[in-house]
Length: 255
Image 1 (cartoon, rainbow, N blue to C red):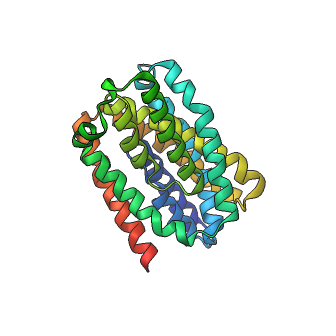
Image 2: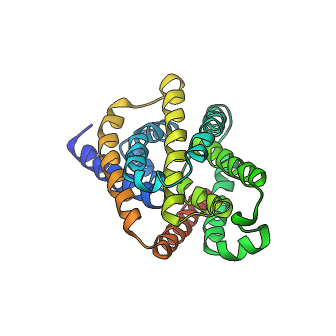
Image 3: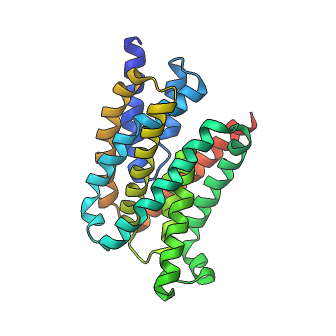
């Protein structure tokens, strides 16, 4: 690895950590950067998953004030669901061909961005979270966390966009608190991928040592920035970024 590669990966890690904390999709910055340094797609995907994990942890710390305003039972209750689903996603990545899923991912991301954009109208169709029974609200929350963590274990690009859109349909909370919970789910899924890929994946640890520290710094900065943004601004920033990510992924899948 030369100085140009180190500069590229350091900058990509900082940008990805910031983007992941605010909206999600930072992997679209670090993944191509790792490819550009000469890694194969599979090695780059696995190395990327391990590298951005510290950024997720920093995001949780940066959004701890909003997280503390959520019911502790809610936060603790999603942990087992996220762990199991993320582990299944990792297994899928290691044993199945990626092409079919790659064609579906862009539409999932675009659907998530659209869901977030029309969240208020969709709530009228599926029901406002405050009108749901506790059992239905809990079941819906775990279903959303399971689906998001499964995707996060498999690939994870724009995971934050999907989680914010999904959690917003089942939680009657501010956008900042939903974003804080999104950071927790992302960090849990990230920890699982680190454990699985460290044992069974072709991780390039030198690249991880370059990307991880800057991703951590970016994660903290992004979380603090997200907390200061008005809910409306944060929502449309995530929608805009999610739409852009989905279109990029769609272009890559079709070319």
